Image 1 (cartoon, one colour):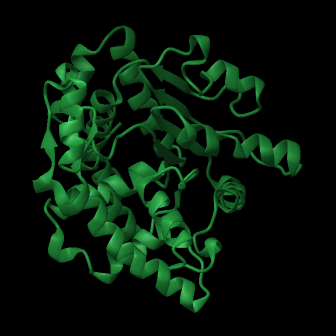
Image 2 (tube, rainbow, N blue to C red; image 1 turned 45 degrees about the vertical axis):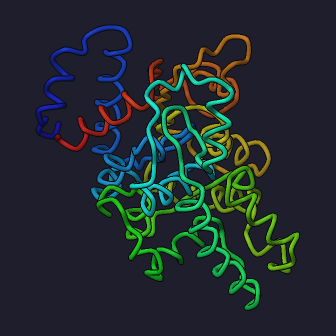
Length: 325
């Protein structure tokens, strides 16, 4: 076990029961899995980039404690929105008290609200749209195709955004991922602000070939090969933050390999999910670990953890534990 820092020591001493104990168990399981040679996939749902998870996730990436990220299109782009427009964001601490008229007033100022945080349309979304449109149209003209995250990596690497950085670059998980050329999977990218903007560019004929941006099916075929090759030497684990497609999509690669491709591949070697959504009545779209056994995703012996709490609180604590903070 690595040396615990002040946060990790506090957590280890005080978090002894219930969801608090599950947090410690999951962190220790994550650490043991890496020490045994495993590699970890982190999945990002919800609005974790707008919650500025990059403050801890970026360092996890830099220290090779994350080897693959699956995220929603929103989390892919919102880390970059925050990078270039942080000073223009507005926090609304009393968002629960907003009236419909208050919400309309935010819209009129082009401030798009995510819980207690408003993303500025002009400084964030339109700035990135302009820069990304140049990437899309350039690739389109050359007959080239890239995944959504690859377009971001190209944009970051070009240096076109550097003059607009408004946070310390070390706190952007996308910059850290780009520096590492970390594999990313972004299922359902079309359901994002930039996905909508790309669709508009296709409708306007700015982009002639709709296939210039590669699709979710191509992400799955890539993931199938990645999992097959990676798991030959090192087991792959899954650390799921929030629910939805970012968790549901990649975990299905294992039963697909077994049932549809009839390939030999181990099951996921570690699993943890953080969510405050109750699994009853279909309110949470991801099955709990025991149910995943029936789908051929996890084994009876897979170290599995459920932390029913707010991911914006839990994930940074676990990352701090693992980083020795």
